[in-house]
Amino acid sequence: MSPDEIELHLKKISDSIQRQNLSQTQLQSLIATLQQQMSTSKTDSDLNVKMLKNDFDRVKDKVNELASAAVPVIRDLDDIAGVRTPKWYDVNVNFEYGDNTVKFNSIEINPDGPFVITQVTPVWEILDTDPEHFVGTFAPTGRIVPPTAFPMLVNSLGRSNTDPTLGGLFDTAAPGGPLKDIPEFSLQIEIAGSGRYWTNQPVSAAAFYGYFGQPLFLGVQGWVERTDRIVVHVTPTVQVPHTGRLRVSFHGYQILGHVNISDALGY
Image (cartoon, rainbow, N blue to C red; front, side, top):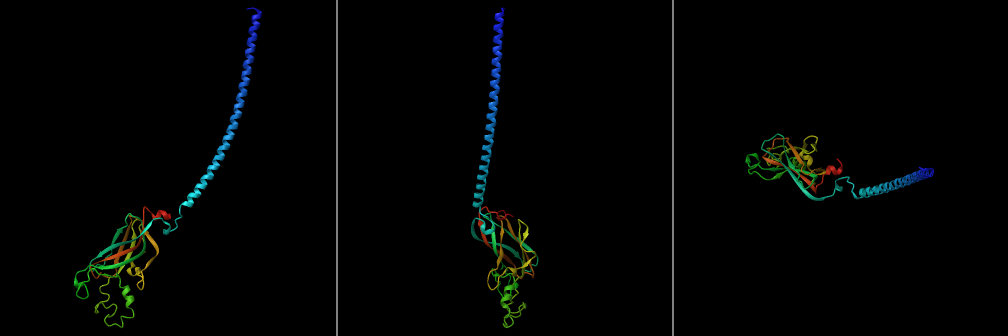
């Protein structure tokens, strides 16, 4: 190879190295530019994400405010939504002539909705057909009388000592026998599902009566959830004078629908 050829070859090599150095410099510059652009884009993206998050939080707070305003606040039974319909439930407890032991029975609330109780009234239904168990000749089978002599005593006070046909109030052998056919019961009311008693001990049937013909309403409305049971425990305080049935009537209304009062009130 001649010197000229060698020189030409070396020049080509030198030019190639220069071009490679230039390309490498350009590549490094391009990489630096891209890195700067990526950093700028990331900063803009982070800022946008932060702004969107702030906007989302504001919208979320507003939605929660609207939802809270739309949902009614339930503080008592009157705030619970649902159609009200009058309702009565009877718990019947049967007794035989001469019984003096505790008996009980229960009734299940139907699944239409919870039952709100406003009043309780016990009455005694005579089912006896044996005339020997009665004063007089005929057995007043089917008659409804009080399950306690309390209302009769209240109405008779001041009169029994002036009316000779009545005899003494507790003179069961007197003509007309004012107390002979009247039983005396004490009651305990239990809500089966919760095991709660509405009474701390058997309470006289007289406690469920009003005065001067006025009904006795409960001081606060009680309730029994749908499909739960009301259990009535009955204690005769004197021997039962006739075969009969104590009928404990629970007055009130039913809230129709799939309503759970305990859940609604937060219990």
